[in-house]
Image (cartoon, rainbow, N blue to C red; front, side):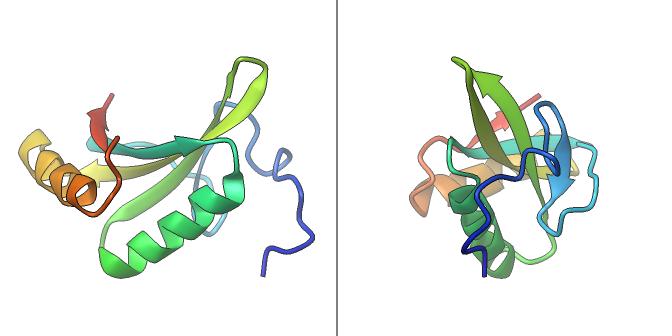
Amino acid sequence: SLEGINSIDSLLPPGMTRHLDGTPAELTGTSICVWTGYDWKHILYAGSQLSVDLPGLQFIMKSDIANSATTYTLLISGMPDPETAEAVAARLRSSGFCGAIICE
């Protein structure tokens, strides 16, 4: 449970990427930006559920600073080509992740 944990700033400072298990990660291949928000717990929970629904994909969290606040982005990295990435992004959009797009 993540109850009682208020911040992950030391684990995920702005600009850093990590796998959902907390290990360092690097974006590779084509990536999909699934969702960005201010609540890291929501991003982590969504990524955990999606990793069950879409096994074999590489889910990564990234933090950034926007308007003086930390934002967290859920990404899928390591897609072999843009066509495969677009097919996965389309599936995500049809499942309610309306902003899922291929990102650089």
